[in-house]
Length: 126
Image 1 (cartoon, rainbow, N blue to C red):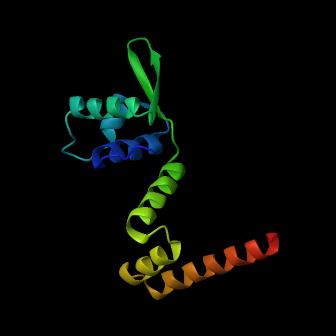
Image 2 (image 1 turned 45 degrees about the vertical axis):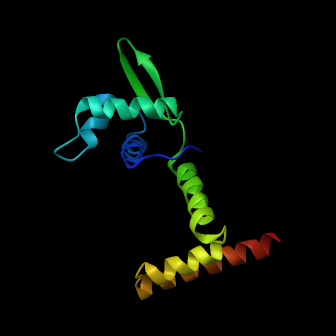
């Protein structure tokens, strides 16, 4: 998967939220001051070329939609981050995340419960 710039990720974030939309709908998602319409148009066109966004033509307008789900993009991004920074080790990533993210006790307990549930699920299936 091709990497996205911050500007491209922002457009994708808005399009995932919208589901489908015209360029004006995407531009309307930005807080003020929004980037120029032409700037957003350029980013959208790059995303079409990278095959992250598809479109349907309605008269002279194009209705855009994501061609990759937010979950799939997040999964690919996390795998890339684990490869680049954590030697493909989920354990190293988890260690870094829990130590560096300043999680509260409640958040740590919630993660512990999620891990326990996944262990049980895998034990039941294995």
